Image (cartoon, rainbow, N blue to C red; front, side, top):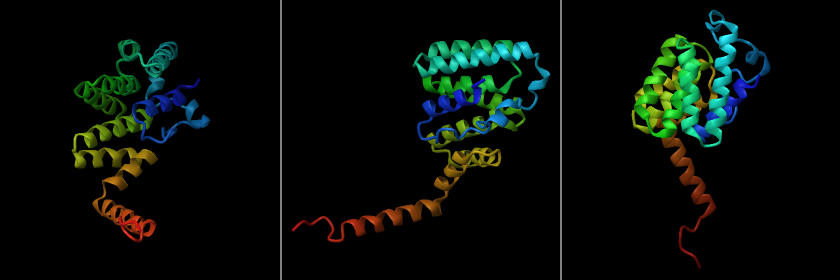
Length: 189
């Protein structure tokens, strides 16, 4: 089963600045483990829902966001208590420009996952990115901190970028490097 890999691809499509593979659970051992709480779902139904999510990922990869949303909606209809479906649908909704709908789904995914596991980690990262795009840095920082505690290297990177001292140091470093590259300033002789 390639679910985690497909999620990494979807994550990369929806968030080009995300390092590919920065999805907890991509290694084979974690891949085989079920998300926390999924053992309560009927195995046949869970397999059907995972297949629908894979179809949704494939549709999104090919640019058919409407088909992706249909697959994710069907997955949620079949297992409304599974967090992953909401996280996946949130990404597709955000692609469509429905940020409010994406936020509702991310909140639902976090609630259903109890803030633990792969779906929660991805949801915190997605919600943090939306907050960041909306210039809500404190909310973004909070979500990235939670995702970082769940293992996201991308969230840790975002926390560094949100640190004002880090931003100032980066700006000073860029200015210093520019002076080293161009010691005479902009004048040319």
